[in-house]
Amino acid sequence: MGRAATWETWKPDPGNPNQHVAMLVDTSECIGCKACEVACKQWNLNEARINQEPGTYQSHPHLDAETWTLIRFVERTNDQGEVEWLFQKHNCMHCTEAGCVTACPTDALQYGKYGVVTLDQEKCIGCAYCEQACPFDAIHVDRNPFNPRAQKAGKCTLCYDRITMGMQPACVKTCPTDCIKFGDRDALIEWGRQRVEELKARGFKNANLYGVDQLGGLHELYVLLEPPEVYGLPANPKISTWTKLWKYAVQPLGKLAVGAGIFGLAVNWVAARRAFLQGEAAGHGAGDHAAGQP
Amino acid sequence: MAARKQQIRKFTRPQILFHWVYASAWLVLVLTGMTFLWRPDPHSPAVGLGAFLQGSVGQWLRLVHRVAAVALMAAPFLWLALEPRRVLAELRELMVIRGNDIKYLLVAPLHYTFGRPPLPPQGKYNGGHKLNFWIVVLTFLGFVVSGITMWFFRGVVPAETFRLMLLIHNFCFWLGLGMGILHIYLTVFHPFTRQALSAMISGFVDLKYATAEHAEWVEQQLRSGQAEVREVPAASGGSD
Ligand code: HEM
Ligand code: SF4
Ligand code: SF4
Image (tube, rainbow over all chains, first blue to last red; front, side):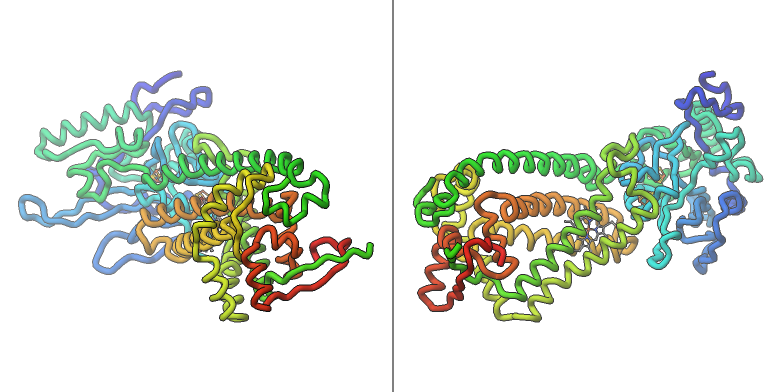
């Protein structure tokens, strides 16, 4: 089938898992209504968590194991001296180079079809390596020592279960302003670039498209009105050097060294038996041992 | 056989108890910690045993890791409580690295493979014991600091700190595992040095062996009259 002509006409093609989808949030159109948050909770059967901090309209302080999408409110005074809100629908970015997948010791996190980073909670052991490796704070494991069943990572799945059936993600479907778009990634990038030009022409001189190149390309794109940092998004996210050293240097070198060591000991065993066991009595002889026997 | 052989006491009961509590906890920690090492390539599924250590199995292993970690951390205090003076004396002995220890370490790989060149005379602990001691102490500290941080301070410390702790824990693992394998090999499998194992079981080690390996210590023990020597039938081997 190849690539869809426009993002809207994208359909899953099991024969071509390399076609990449994306979600694009046009933040200039977002009204901060949080319908997407509710749709996400509902479809994914995640519990409602009431932990709003006073003095903000943001529903939760951050994402958590049962809260997979969140409208982050940035309240600020703009150039004209007016107080304004910027909204960013925050969730897993489905990175091409994902910190979480790099760190996951099990098969729970995988690079799945269509560019989606999939999470299989059955396999998850709740170690939270992913939580600590993600550059976007987008995946979490509850702190719940008494209930192993609750100790599972949770994050946006890009509604893998829906999109593989040809449906749109729950949040996309529900958004009243249609500011969340879903479909073929290349086509969405094209759309996003045009939208940025349009916004610039209308005076939003800082408008930009986020997610095209970060970490090998995110599958969550944003048309932003201000530079990414204003939204708390890293302009140049990276997988931590510690994580890379841990995964790609210390682990393989450690395995190599221990393997080589065991081989060395096997060789030693063969040689030492010849050196020390010739004539049991003499071999144990202490006096001549110190003098350089046998 | 009527032949009898002499043994000399090397370790006390509390020290032996401490050794084995520490060793068992360490072994459990190695085995449960290995859960995390079966996914070398993030672009592919887990390999080998990895397929069996996922989901609830892995969750249980993580729990066992923590229980064993508590035992490991408690073990030194157990020994300290039982015979504090001796612990300090032993530490003093183990901590100091002398010229002979370095010479020992340089010669030992050849000596224990080919039987020559001869080893420089050693005290109660030889250069190898001291190397083992230092690696155990340093990895212990590394494990405790990084392990406790990952266990209790996830989300409290910055993510970058957690990532560094994971790196430290992993580094200590390979260092400790390598030393541990060598330690077990020398005391259980090596044709000559395996005679030392009895010291950590009954407390006594063959006097001839001790004289060969720890000449300075044996001499000092005999001279000072501190030596606790006993005779056992030669056929009973080293262990008791
Ligand atoms: C002394 C106290 C120790 C504590 C508190 C501790 C705790 C931890 C914690 C919290 C983790 C992270 C995974 C999880 O949450 O389950 C971990 C991983 C691990 N532990 Fe320990 N541990 C200790 C000692 C040891 C020892 C002695 C060994 C082995 C010699 C060991 C081997 C490992 C390994 C191999 C991992 C996986 C590391 C990785 O993924 O790179 N630990 N430990
Ligand atoms: S945003 Fe975080 S959780 Fe999502 S794929 Fe990237 S690293 Fe993983
Ligand atoms: S918590 Fe689960 S998903 Fe996250 S790294 Fe550990 S096993 Fe993988």
